[in-house]
Length: 265
Image 1: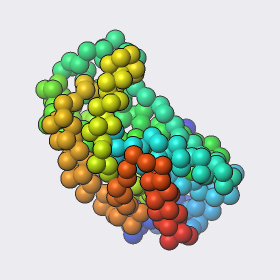
Image 2: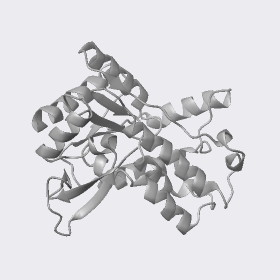
Image 3: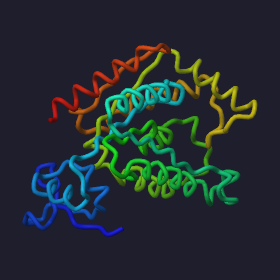
Image 4: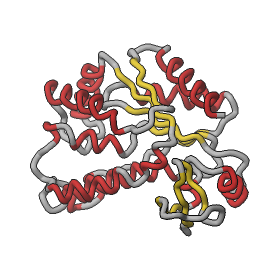
């Protein structure tokens, strides 16, 4: 897919056709990538015309540890948005260990590459859309960064250089994520949820790409997810929300999303 050059001035991206580059940051993006950036007005109008769209899709990221309750929140949000006549896409591209014989068992040679390909598939979830109004994610590339900061996830298979190669992919779409709505979920019952889910997997369900964690290891991961929320430089469209295993928590998430959208437009 063809890419064009965009120039960043005061945190706003402009197609190079409309501004002069005075040594500002510049990057090349496809139309589908660029449309998710914070854009200058001329660039936005031109891009919408090129893509035959009336409006820019809203990227919404539901963040949180495994077991926090993202899936049920996302299901309810999709139902709510679709009832309002909005088109929603919730991509689920994945890279599994059994996709490639090199990845079946973790090794020093290939583990970093496997983790990088996991992130590549997650990145595809962000930028793969058509005429939808909302792109809704319940997993996104920064999760892998949080995992790598969790001591119990370090099995000794990834070298510092391998980690660097992974981080290149993790932060590939930082500019897009900076412009997204991000809701960070917390749940006091997350460990119990995680343990029940992993027990079901042991009985024949789909296994994740990481080994099941013990309680201490899991709580270490919870701390890393929370401590490294500083990864978001701008908190204008970011909110941490504590949820419960109930039927109403999703409404608080929805109401916050609506507030963010109203504030912007």
